[in-house]
Image (cartoon, rainbow, N blue to C red; front, top):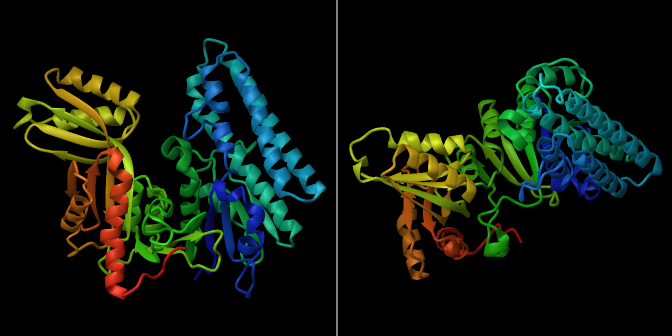
Length: 480
């Protein structure tokens, strides 16, 4: 039976790696410590934004500028900014001048190699026989790998300087002419790895012929992490975050009122993913669930706390585990002649899929179909135009709303919808809609965006805090 764990560290947390040396990387259980752990690392915070595009604002990075400029060299200047940002990060994290020089040389080699590649491709595509758009996904993958390779390399330097036998496992395929499958890439990389004697530090991006970016885009690192855990037969998969997985956002509800979730299951994790609160990428959760590997979500900066264990156990007590809100757009399609006619919903779904709009929930009646979606107004205007082309008589309304969801692995018998509606009424909040699928895992309250924050606090007080007080006589397991 395997005794090692596979552990994932996100970009924001990686940027504070110096604070984690003693508490996370070097810390152990006293028996073979600090080994028996494999770390999968993301690029340092902000680096992937500079390489691709800003995840929040959409501002183009190297990739975005290269894609939009046929002959300009603006992308090359953007690549210089990436090199500067990488140097700033490892210059702060690495104390020894020799380590800094090694990191500088590593960055120079990767950045200049990527620059040469992009220049050659730009020249090649100046001829009419070659099309740049046919190579853009490959370029996106090449650039993504730069960030993870940098953070993994620097981490190994930090470990070595502190007496830990770290080993860089570079899955990015740098200067590798082969095109292995992901399984082959992982198996070959770990053929001679012994986690009991060394600490592998693995790039979150893995180059493979399946093309992780094409299917998962920037969620690829968690998919690599899950596949690695499954293929190496890990005892447990661990994701280190900067916070505890709690019953609500402490900044919104108050740190003295939220409750840390100690144990839940993959069904609950799926519901959170659907609401944009990813404990783990849904594809990664599926891989771990099928491999029967439990997942632990831990606070990297609270090493003495065991975190939240997520597994396939469905026998837990009935309770609301989390209340969370998500701003959305409501796409309402009304067509008087819809009743009794098939195909309307299929056409709407096709338009939403074509324009990459994420569907969170939907309702329908005889002549109205409403989708609650996560997308941009610009994208929704394209969807509206496409639907009207198919159904000219339809009346379409798009408005901003919010979905506040009470989620739990087992809500059976709790009368969440009734209790939630009563609480909202007492708070003077009039919900637009309420949805309960009957699976007893979540109840969704659709409210105006202005009421979202207050609805979260109200429902948390009624469904989580009151239940906790009733069952224990006092609040316990508070995060603060």
